Amino acid sequence: MTCQELRACLDAHLDGELDLPLSLAADEHLAFCAGCQWAYAQERELRGLVRTRFPREGAPAALRERIRGALARAEQAAGVGVPRRWAYWAVPAAAVILVALGVGLWQRSAPPPVVRELVAKHVMYSRLDAPAEIVSPSEEAVSGWFKGKVRFDVAVPDFSPSGIRLVGGRLADLTGRQVAYLLYEKGRSLISLFAFPGRGLALPSGEGTSGRDDRFYVAKVDGTEVVVWTQGEVAYALVSSLDRESLLECADTVWRLVVSRKPPGV
Amino acid sequence: MGRRARREEFEDQALVHLDRVFHLALRLTGNRTEAEDLAQETYLRAFTHFDQFDPGTNCRAWLFAILRNAFLNRLKRQGREVPGLDEGELERLGSGMADGSAPLESPEEELLKRVVGTELVAALDRLPMIFREAVVLADVEECSYKEMAQICGVPLGTVMSRLSRGRRLLRRALETLVREREEARRVR
Image 1: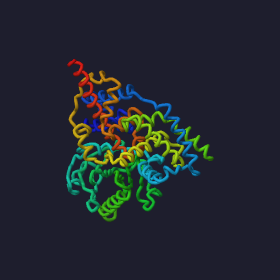
Image 2: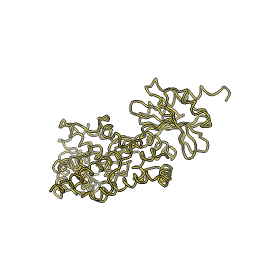
Image 3: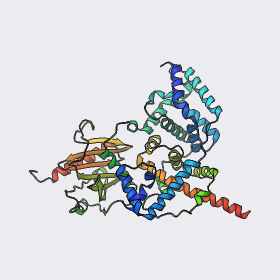
Image 4: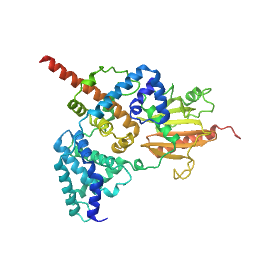
């Protein structure tokens, strides 16, 4: 982990919100970097100050009684428990609340650790100003940059028909294995494409998850969409805050590109 | 469930969080009377939609999400600017200080030790709403990032960046307040 990466996840580390591999990497960096140690101590002091000294005011006793009274009146005023006064905006309000909560956000099914790690990486990289090691809009240039750096052929897809622009690429790691990481952007959204050797990793399968397409595993982790699949020896993951349909479209583009690059008979 | 039983159930589950709901309302509105109104509106809305609450989930986070929406709707109804929609402005506020690439800040050593409680409140109240709520939810209410993402309806990455910007803005506001107080005393 570099200083830049550490600073990007400093608060999350302090709050105990980093995934284990990132948290270990952060501790390792902190052990040897005096500058980051100092920044970490400063942040910890501020956080501690707010947590211990901020005056937490309680509600006035009269308010509790006022609310209980209002609830009782609301209950009486409508047979179904919806007071007339509120009913005219209750429907749009419910819609707003549902949208804000996001249906998927309240789901409690836990995605596999490897998926959470991919999302954590995506979130970390989306916070860096310049995460790419090779910056180029050319698919050939980025693909060529990976030659000799990773042991598999890195297919760099062209998503430009969907308005998604190639930013560049970098090396990353995923539970100790080397990953080719490609960055794309659409407007202000980062789209991450990870490619890595799939063997020995507990990767989720697509069956029954994406509904219309068994090739792809899809999940939503904390508001971020993830699509994971394997083609031959290489596993791919697309991670973004774009909507699921757009991401599946991208996954299909990668799939077709990988198929077309395979020499016949392999 | 009978109507009365439903209300009792709601009071048992939701009314225990009134202190926290009121405090968040106070930090959002910055005004005691408005905060009381907003808390009441939150509870009435929550009661209306109590059927949609999943008993296995966090009731406080659910109430906070409703409170936040009620607050934003109030701003809209009053024709006031709804914060958090102009990402460009947020960029400007956060620029050069939030991300890892930013130059290192060198806050004055020991300054935080001289902060008094009322200055913490005043400094926080100076922050733009989305940064203020991030700091309040994380550090005063001690919500997890996941809860914050649910409450604010944004992805986890946005929670992280708002919180780290919010803490930096808070530090800056605290430094200003402490310096102003200490200078005023020197002048006297």
